Length: 179
Image (cartoon, rainbow, N blue to C red; front, top):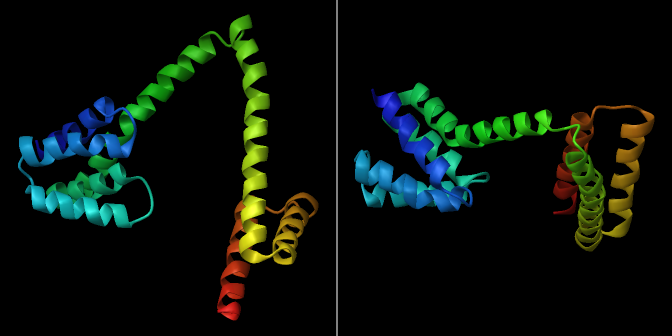
């Protein structure tokens, strides 16, 4: 029964909380503190503060902690699944609709419009990353990273995860040397 309650405590806010994790926090608090009484408002605010100090989505961090506190490891998994289940369901429904109408002229026209927009957004993001890298790391170091990454990805056909790991290691080592 506790696992069903954990599921509902995080699934319902996930459905009703339009706007992401921060929008669901009051709804989660209502379930966890008000409805089920698993913790006090003070304890909830401490969990929220800890969750805010860690990287990643706040709702999943809180769900993992509260689920673990109430139901152990299985409770943590149930709470995490309940937090992401509304998004998964919506994505599956939307994908089914898209697949059903993928050959219609309207969907094809949308795809023709969306692809260039995404390409422009990625180009702008890349330019911004390069600009930030040049200002924080310097032009020479940044260009070496870009050229080295290009070489490893395109010429050596190395997996992107390996190239990212190498870049992280180089950044960590150079950070230790500089500081």
